[in-house]
Length: 231
Image (cartoon, rainbow, N blue to C red; front, side):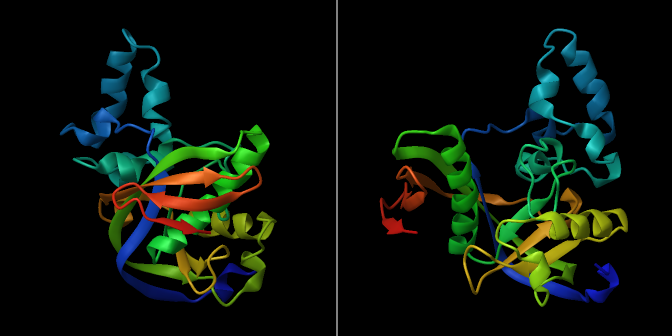
């Protein structure tokens, strides 16, 4: 794998779509007016009366103060970088660091997340039914990214070994992120952004219910319109 074989291109999406579980509440610390460099001190003080606050806040050490984002809606940007786990790796991360993943269309975001949610549901042996609600986030993307789209080795549907190595290498080298082809929605494109300060704070759009048929997420319902479409 040679990372310098990837060209860097300007990626401009007027709308970038990300979908997340609705159960996750905003993190007050990120939404407040406190300076990001003071977050550790504020959290440490609160932890004296609320020891579980660190679980809520996440791994602040993973994002340097100068790269943190604060203000209304900032939780949507910060959360994927501070709430990480090797139990939840992605195409371009092994779970030891976070990325902000988005698609260039609403359907792309839904199909990408539906695939991974289906895998989690299969592992949990949940009964079929309407299982989980998700919220759509929308912002814009205008950023120089490494272009993985021409390289099939980074798009394996199941094995992320090569793509994770690429992500680790580029992030360590100071790259902004990667643009790549959607594997779950052919014709779509996705982006993996390495730091929260590289994109603007998203706004919340529609909510969606995911239906689990016992083998896969087979359909999605828009909670605002009640429209249902098959996957």
